[in-house]
Amino acid sequence: MKLAYVASLTVSVMVCASATMAQAVVLIDGTLDGGYGNPKAAQSVHTGFGNASDGVNSFANGSELDAGYAKIDMDNGYLYLFLAGNLESNFNKLDVFIDSDATGGQNEIRSDNPDIDYNGLNKMGRDNVNGYAGLKFDAGFAADVCIMTTIGGDPVTQYANIAQMLTDGGGAGGYLGNGVFSGPTGINLIDDQVYGCQLSISNANTGGVSGDSANPGSGCGVITGIEMRIPLALLAWDGVSDIKICAFINGNGHDYVSNQVLGSLPIGSGNLGGDGVGGYLGGFPGALRGVDFAAIDGDQFFSATGPDVCGSVCLGDLNDDKVVDSSDMGGLLGAFGPCAPGTPGDFNEDLVIDSADLGSMLGVFGACP
Ligand SMILES: [Ca+2]
Ligand SMILES: [Ca+2]
Ligand SMILES: [Ca+2]
Ligand SMILES: [Ca+2]
Image (cartoon, rainbow, N blue to C red; front, side, top):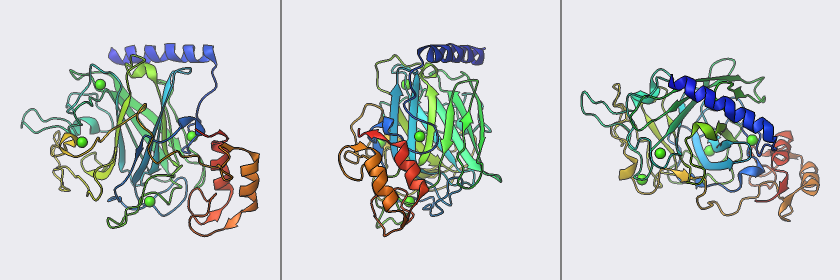
């Protein structure tokens, strides 16, 4: 019954959006758009889940969450999230939690939420029989919606699920569909017609943080990753309160949390695992009973209206005139070919300036944020 309620809510949103016909702020394609503005979270921890080095859209041999962007598009009724980085194409998981209802939600994950992705959400929840804790968020963060996505198989395919996280459990949720890549460099799209969500991923990034704890690098500057669109009507948002996001890379079975969390864990942190210090516990529910973000320094979430990090990023503005336009494109075309590390215009840091970089520049055409 609640599922039907959410579905009908979605229909009304879509009608509303088509009536206003406002221009979309971003395109869901796995590449950063200028409409996001500056990042609200950046990674400062080396990845414990493998440093991605393949550099192709569809496939990655490691996972990292380099930076977090969030854009509330009131005109069209969507929240857009862009998580720069990579999701390994081995069915490891990206778990995203949204705190959009200032008065409700779950600070500790419950185990009576909708069954999505083989009950992966409830696996992270509290075990009331044995008294094991569920994963705990920071104080001040109570998740209202969970979105999970994963990628793998042949042909490489992305899958996603969504669920409400109501204060008292229950609620609606379901499968959002899958998006197949047309080829290694192709673009994929999950275009869900029930809830109105869209997701896409590009795994082209080879920059961002490293896998070396002594030289972690920075997540700033990465412009490909996991991108999603969520109707605001699904978020029980009051239209004025902050919208907060907690995202992390998790193991195949949602039972082993990596050290790739946004907001970032303290520099040098290892994988959290299930016990909070890298050990696997398993069990169902209660598999993450040692993970308590409130006990870890800093905010393991970021806000759509929070302070900018990474300084002011204006990707594609090669001539530094605060607008990305044809003169920058001319400069990029003139520099096509192999290049040295750190060369401006090699946005995906694959040591060649080519059509992939041109695509990235076209995605951010316009005035700098
Ligand atoms: Ca995009
Ligand atoms: Ca909430
Ligand atoms: Ca990296
Ligand atoms: Ca914390």
